Every structure is written in C-alpha cells, then in structure tokens.
Amino acid sequence: MADIIQDIESKLQELREYIDKIDLDLITLLHKRFEYVKQIGHLKVKNQASIYRPDREKEIIDKLLSYVKQSNLSNLDKPTIEAVFYEIFAISRNLETPQKIAFLGPIGSYTHQAAESMFGPLSSYLGLTTISSVFEALYHKNAKYGVIPIENNTNGMVGETIDNLAKYNFTIVNEIILSIHHSFATTAQNLNDIERIYSKDIAFGQCSDFLLHYELNNVERIAVNSTALGAKYASQDTKSGAICSGIAAKLHKIPILFENIQNHSENKTRFVIISDFHNVRGKHDKTSVFVVIKDFEKSGALFELLRDFKEENINITKIDSRPIVATAGFQSGFYMDFHGHRDDANIQRIFTKRQGEIKWLGSYPAFER
Image (tube, rainbow, N blue to C red; front, side, top):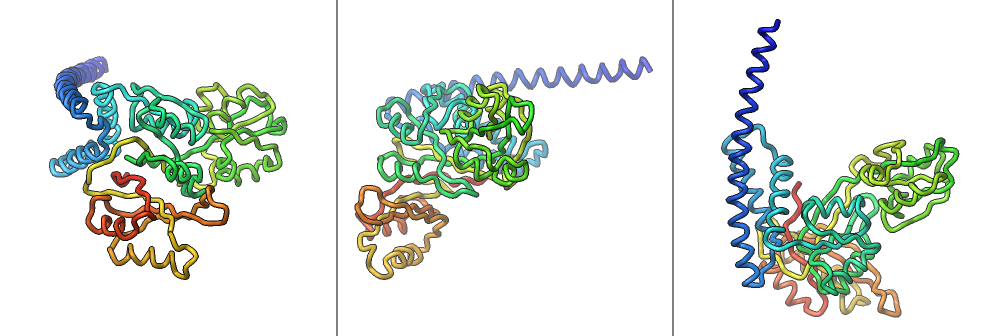
C-alpha cells in the first residue's frame, strides 16, 4: 500500500513539474505580449486613437475559437477562452492607458459586475447613483467609458438610458448580456419580523412570485438606485430584507436566506458601454438609432419608416417607443436596433433618406455569447 501511495505522489510531483514549466512559459509569453501592447499604446496616443477596440477584441476571440476547433483542443471551449482573454485584454488596456469607467450603482451592483467583466479588476471604477449621472461624468470628462443597463428580458427597455442616449452625443461601443440571479438577504431572525424590503424598482417585479409565495407581497417596498444599495440599507436595518445579488449580500455581510428567487431562470439584462469614439466596421455588427419621424401625424408614417428598412434588406431586431419630454404634446420617438454597421451602403442610404429624423447611437459588435 505504501508503494502505491509513493507511486501516486511521484506521479503527482512529475505532473506538477510539467505545470510549473508551462506556467513559466506563459509568464514569458505574457511579458512579450505586453511589450507589444505598450508599443501599440504609444502609437495610439500619438495618433489620438481609441485604446478600447471591442471590434479587435472580438476578432481575436473568433480567431482563437477557429484555431481551437481546427486543432481539436478539447479542453478549451468558448466560455473558457473568453474568460481568460477578456482578462488579458483588460490588463493590456490598462498598460496602454489607465482606464476610468463610470457605472450605475455602488460596488457589487449588477452593472459593476458587467463593467468588470469587460474592463477587469485593475481599472478605476466610479460608481454613480443614476444613469443620468453616468452620462454627466463622461460629459465632464471624469470618465472615459460608461456602463449602463439598457434592457431586461422580462421588464423591457430602461427609459432613462434611452432618454440620455437621445440627449447626449456619446455612442454605444459595445454590449454585455449578464444573467441576473437575485437573492433574498436579511439580518432578521424570522420572515415575520421583516417590515421593509429594499431593492431596485424593477427587481420587485422580477421577483414577484417569490414575494407572493412567502407572504412578503404586502411588506413595504423601498425602491433605491441599485440592488447593491438595497443590500447596504438592509445591513443597517434589522427589520428589513433586500433583493440583491449574492455578491452584494456578501460584500455587506448579510446572510442569504434564499437564492435564485427571480421569476424566470433565464432573467438577463443587457448593458451597453458608451464612450466618445466610433467603432470601425466588423464582421457581425449591430447598430442602434433613435428616430423622430417628422410627419408622425401622417397616416402610415411608421409603416413607411419600416418599409424603408425592408426595402434596404435591413433586419430590425428591436423597436421601442419613447415619449419625447421636450414636446408639449404626446409625440414619441423610436429606439431601434438592427443588423449592420453605419458605414454599410444600405444603412447609409437610410440615413440619407431620413436625414434629420435619425440619430445614430452607435455601431458595435453584436453580442454572440
């Protein structure tokens, strides 16, 4: 028996030595990669080019996936490659120029998680209380990038985001889709002791079944700016609970009573990254616009707009009406997503035909994960 244990230990030591050698090779190769990154950074600064290139990052990921498939590297799949290389990309960007990102909510919010998934832990993060303040931060150059929610697959579009995209001249440069898993956290000893629940307004709707089943639907609901802020308030109030992320609960040291309490297991939120530069055309792009039809009272005005897209063979993937606050009446604008890039010939023709009606909000790599 001792001989068998000794043989296993000997084999483990041999395998560990192989791993150690590979780790040294990886460190050497990362060092070389980062040297090239620094050179590229110097050239970008000299040319006043954008450090963040989501189209280039997607191109690299696609090439790696193709290589993995051709080489039959069975231990590597898409999520693994993305997890490793998006971290490398984030570190590389910070080597080129330190990154400062404004986002909605405090540390531990879902928007913070989305931001960190793209920009990594080394970037500088500025948590703000409203979506409007994220746009203000970019406007006053207190941050280079903003990360904000734009859509939830159960609650629909985020109106404040659409309003600010229509108001400011920042463009969407990338999108992130994050699975949202809510937890119920509380310091209360018993559910019957809970008098208040803190959370973001839309989270209450996303967890309505849970609140009903556990007879919490009549408890006072206090809407705050983020689920993470809800966790903070609940940590200071022994007669309350919070609907929040597991990360936020751990961050504020609140016991999690229930996990995955959202109505739908596939609850997802789409976030966008905004900045002051434009992406070049890629292989699989999405474009977002805000449209205000000039003759909206004319019969068939919206139909004619949609027909223009149909005639140019442009696939619209999202259309959502939004009231225009600046007008005295009830005029609406339309937020739209569709396949393609602003520089595509058919999209250019639409922009020319609808000049003065369409505000371009950005063209960026379509999320495919």
